[in-house]
Structure formats: C-alpha cells, structure tokens
Length: 75
Picture 1: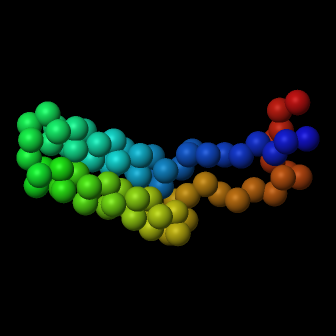
Picture 2: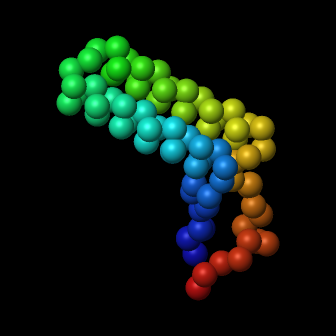
C-alpha cells in the first residue's frame, strides 16, 4: 500500500510559499517595467523565502514525522 505523505501542511511550508509568491510578483513587475534592481530584489526575497522555510522547519514548525503504523490511512 502506498504511504500518504503530508506535503506542505505546515507553518514553514506556507511561509516559504507566500514569500516566494510575493518574490515572483516582484520579479514579474521587473519584467513588465524593465528594472534590473527590482528583479534582483525579487531574487533576494525568493532566497529569503527558501531560507525562512528551512529555518522554520528546523525550529519545529515543519511537517511532523509520523509513524506509518499510527497515522490514519485512506483505503
């Protein structure tokens, strides 16, 4: 039986995704209104989002590891 994995249901994942979406919007604006520094700022913000997600995950705000025997399963 396949194991159900819990992807993205954590504070760390949501924080990283929201920051990266904002960074993508900033980089998109930099393409529409040609501005190199705005694009670089968006790239830096995207890196901050990835780092923030990893740090929050390491701090215990990530998806909790579960024992497959105790986790509820859908059959």
